[in-house]
Amino acid sequence: MNEITQRFEYSDGTLKNKLHEFNSDELAETEYRRATYVGAKILKNSEIKIESFKDLQKIHYLIFHCCMNGQARFEIVT
Image: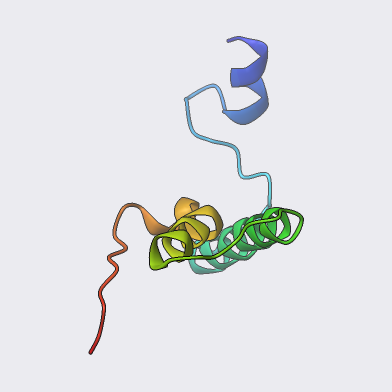
């Protein structure tokens, strides 16, 4: 095992739960909140100009990409 593997995985290859949360629903919620916070912080500290719907899609991806699993679809509702 190399240093990175030891840091993030147990010897059987299972990823370590660094949040010490054992309820899967609570873990998912915590990960979502942390990822959203980080994305929003990056967005707040940047000078992004929103000029199109495509720009909003990029922002949405920045904030939520780790939680979407490729399932998000953008539709224009009329």
